[in-house]
Length: 171
Image 1 (tube, rainbow, N blue to C red):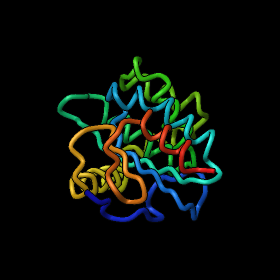
Image 2 (cartoon, one colour):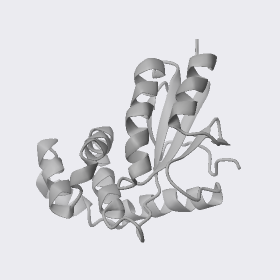
Image 3 (cartoon, one colour):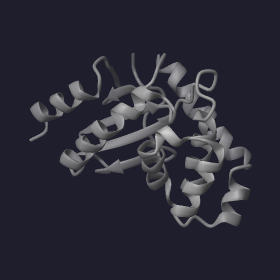
């Protein structure tokens, strides 16, 4: 399966802008497998972040995880204040505490302007970004989380396999 649409300026990216290797994760903030993948993906970025680009797309499995979508909304609202990755990391690092009050607490801890934040979480474009990520996941053949794509192709291993692959191909 291939990634649709291609990575663009609407995506949350970190690492090298025009990297030869682009990793895309479709993730659910409440998914235990995404939680387990998070430190491995973080390690990949710490080791290879100067050579690769990492992209996160929302794929909340709302029927299974009641806080997946609220967490995605909070992360997207944080993005409007330039703090997407800080919120993304804080959610995964505290995944076992997920609840709506806790998500608001994280926003405070990250010193996100609360008045602006409370307006942003209700914005239709915040919900639309999550829906658009989710739809792109469906079009790309995502059927669970985390789903990883490397250079636009579905990666059929787990995060550890990806770490192994990176150690072989990134010099």
